[in-house]
Amino acid sequence: MTKVSESNELKLEIKHDYSSSHDGIVPESARRGTWSHHVPLWITLYAGFSYMSLGSELYSFGYGLHAVLKMLLISSLCYLAYAIPAAYLGAKSGQTHALMGRSVFGVSGSMIVSVFVLIAPLGWIGYQANTLSTMWNALYSWTPVVGIGVVIAVLGIVNNVLGFTGISAFARWVAAPITLVWVLYMVIKAFSTSGSSILNSHAAGVKAPGLVLGIIAAIGFATYGNEADLFRYAKPHVKNVVPPLAVGLFVGQILFPVAGWVIAARIHSGDFGKGFSEAVSFSLFGLTFLAFLLATATQIAVNDANYYESLNAGQNIFGGWAKWRRIYTCAFIAALGGFMAWWVPQNSANFFRVTTWLAITVPTASVIMYVDQLLLPKLLAGYKRPTKVVPSWNQTARGNWVGVVVLVVAVAFGAYGSGVAPGQAGSPLAGWGIVPVEAWIMAAVLYSVIVAAIWKMPNAKKILGYASTAVE
Image (cartoon, rainbow, N blue to C red; front, side, top):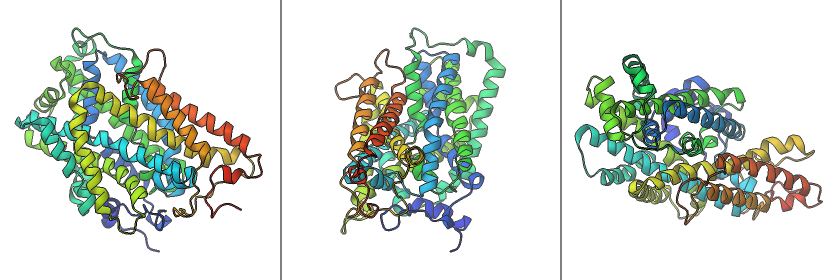
């Protein structure tokens, strides 16, 4: 086998190879370098201006800078505790989140997880598209903002359909680094010219809610959910997944939100469009065309990752049908992305629902999977669910009902406690704490305890939904 050449790397990445049962594990020859590939990739994914908009949102909620920094730090630590094992699981298995779901959850559970993985990023596709439309409006007064956002969301699938690599390469090697330098300069200049007034700034007439709301929102911004999908191209060692996550978090979860908050404090408004316009004139010397290029390239690159996640899940659900084509999955999720671009801006509660739903659903499934694959084999003698081969649907068990039930219970708890279940107002319930993290912990504990009890039974593998190829 020959190694993948650097010139073909982006092309292969956008084509989303290794996402079906017959070709579902990334071979060792296709694995890529930590600093040459994964660190630049995660800087690109976190260098989107939506992370600046998080700072603007937090300012509009009435949070001061000290509170914002505290929320960002706590959310980053929570995310790392989840993401490092999730990323390592992807690197170790070489499989997508959806394909591994077949081995761990069985047919029924894999379908549930795939629906979560398909739907959760669509809200982000809508949000990211509207963020770009808002920035275009700030630069050139293009309207209607929501209508343009819908068009951006639908057309965002083009890279996945046609395999264009130019804009992805531009985003990774040009736009993201320049944007990073710009935002860093913006923050330094703001504090050096008006630091004291910024430090004491608050949104006028707004009483800040508790820190929990901001922490949950920030966790949602940090979480991609498909860490396994992206890190299945990494070499299978923990040391290869930590640097990209840590560097990416500093960019997207600390630097960019602080920049967004600082610019909002300068103009005394959480309106991100006004804030972006101020940022261009304040720290980019009024170069609107450069701002346009940077914003467009980075936002499209971020949404490519969202579509990547949805597309892999959709292919897991539909790709096994003989007459089904990948283009059908692309068209389906593009239509849903366009709907989300219309729905998300309708009210602020929808924004919180998007961030929270992603923080609860897919990560909870990931927690169950890495407990199953990484923790239980060390705790239970003889426990090892094989994942060296992706089972076909005919070989996949009907369900690992323990995993399915635990997932449903933990997600229901997380959705209700966060206030995003159907009929709720879209804000976390008072006194419930950081509910998404509690849902992750609940899933890990419940699954471990129940599996440990079942493992002593003679028909444990059948009860736990081992694939037919793995049952002795």
